[in-house]
Image 1 (cartoon, rainbow, N blue to C red):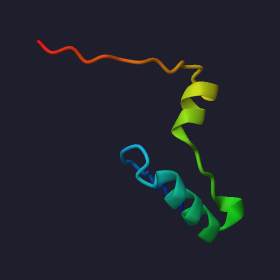
Image 2 (image 1 turned 120 degrees about the horizontal axis):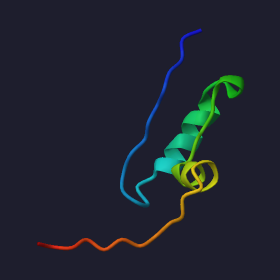
Image 3 (image 1 turned 45 degrees about the vertical axis):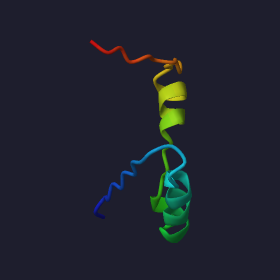
Length: 57
């Protein structure tokens, strides 16, 4: 079996989750895994969300 990795990138509210869910619904369920960045960062990496300010020189 050959593995395929599909990465979705885009701005907030651009439809990444909607597209990921539609792709997952069309692919074989036993061979499909959707990983959400928020879950990975929060639950697997134990990282906290913080507000960051960009500073201009």
